[in-house]
Amino acid sequence: MALIEARSVSRNVATTAGKLQILSPLSLAIDAGEVVAIVGASGSGKSTLLSLLAGLDLPSTGDVIVDNVSLGDLDEEQRAILRGEKIGFIFQSFLLIQSLSALENVMLPAELAGSRNPEKQARELLEKVGLGERLTHYPNQLSGGEQQRVAIARAFIGEPQILFADEPTGNLDTETGSRIEELLFELNREFGTTLVIVTHDDSLAQRCDRVLRIAGGKLVEQGANTEAGAEEKSSAKGNLATGSKEATTDVA
Ligand SMILES: Nc1ncnc2c1ncn2[C@@H]1O[C@H](COP(=O)(O)OP(=O)(O)OP(=O)(O)O)[C@@H](O)[C@H]1O
Ligand SMILES: [Mg+2]
Image (tube, rainbow, N blue to C red; front, side):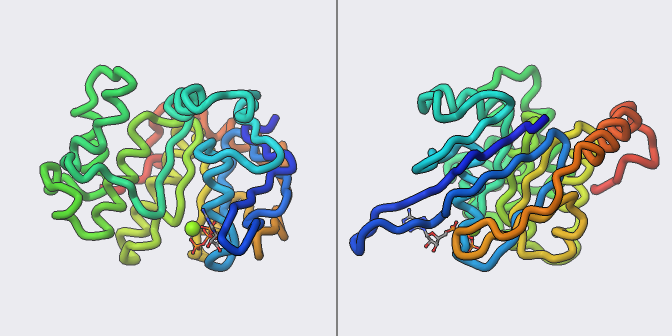
């Protein structure tokens, strides 16, 4: 059964020139444990779609259903709670809190969720993304790629059921980018995290179970969403959760 479903979702914005439709009505379903790429030209509506699927924005028409909950039925606060419980988001623009260090930025969601040892978790994640030496740096003391890696560590900390990533490797060199890519797929394998990744990187898109293509605000391709694929994955997940060695990719 679908974990995320969009039903005739569209998005209009008001501009000085009148109403602009940035996303035409589209429907799609993403199963638990799927890894889905969203591709398309700049300005085609990828980030807009991601924000709607993650409940960060509400659609102008239609509805998004996450884990059987209709987001349109929730108020702002209830949506924030649902996001806190189930969803991680890596923003294109990172959105780090400037007055907090790298470590504090990553710890924050875990602190808010009342986790037991947020600092330990945050340190481990920052080490995983190669920033063990930058824990006390503030965002303005970090390079673009480093800020992106802090944002990735922050998105991972709650072990979200669904992770939305908006061009997670967009600002990174090839090597760091592929490390981050491995981290994402590792999360999927180990915890069955559903991944929805906006990317311009063809090789990353190829590795995903399915590619959704957006052109001019329209969903023009969405591949096959197979129950069989999801089942295959969930049985593989069992092995990996027990920590079998071959299954774990060392990214540090
Ligand atoms: N609040 C807004 N008001 C007006 N236009 C908007 C607004 N948000 C997005 N747009 C427009 O909607 C279109 C889709 O934007 P979106 O950010 O979803 O594109 P994208 O596919 O993520 O592009 P990129 O690859 O460059 O990140 C763009 O043309 C953008 O200018
Ligand atoms: Mg975008």
